[in-house]
Length: 404
Image 1: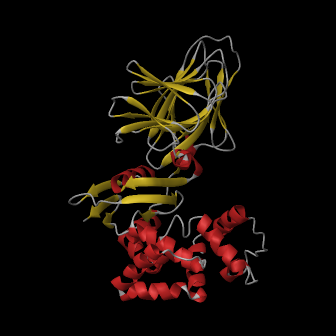
Image 2: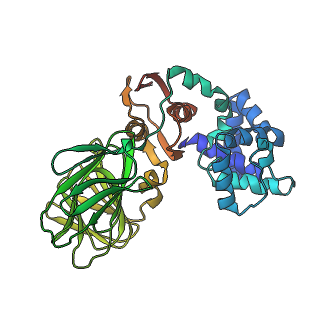
Image 3: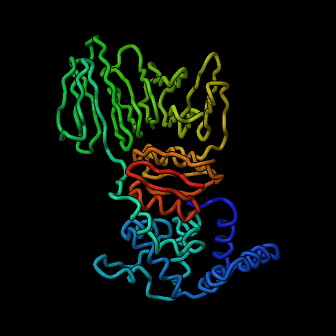
């Protein structure tokens, strides 16, 4: 993640120089002005031309998670150099000089430079991770698979504390927890007409997967709940609070419907994401494939793949074309993705995933962020990234106070 503006611009120019790409006259003027701002900038510029220093920084970044980072580089570039995981990190560097530029370009593709310009622009921050950890008496781990299932009779099952297998019988329906950790429903008698409802609820720092009776797959994000029948009868309708990603099973005779506050999303068979947190001003429905109809207070819009329906403050429905699909479902894929997000929007996401109380001392700093952060990092690592982007804070237990 990197603050929009000068840091991102300088990082792009430094990257062009290292790749031996010519700068325009305007770009050279911007870079020269930045160099003159401080001796540290001048040193940073010259270090960029020293491959030994660059390699050291890249290796420091990679060492945060060598296996995952190497896999990303291989996936991004097709580079298949042998790597022995039992050898030191230096073995990540291809032995032949001609691979150096290719490896560096791969690093940029996976976000070391392009999406996280703080690698060089703020290279000193990697050496101060302990400063943030010292503020947190006990580091806070990221969220995980946590949920509570409330049955029709009111009994509650804490899903994180039970193993796989059958966990409940409801009428003629068996509820099971599968090997993957997700819930699944199986009807033994489709002629059974009694309608029973379950509610799956995730806490802050929790998420869970579910397969509905019709085969629809649901990924439920943190601080969310989904109410649904254990067996669909004449229709297929569920109620959502919070955020979820759906892969709706096709059934032309029974459209799949999701109720969100006063809004209804109707589909036949498609994949889409709904974000409807009460602490956000906008409900976002993003279509990845298929087609859906979104209705609210007499308004109705049809979405095509790549479009997003926006309902802001319960008012007029609008459509956003060319929506950022990766950002909409990033949480499902293990990422926070920010596309010109302000600081309060960033902190709301972090608060839900790490179960934090976020406070502000004075005015909220004016920032815009773009890029991604992996959701499996500990809180201290995430806060270090914010620190690199000139966000000041104080941590007391699970309370993070943003300072001017």
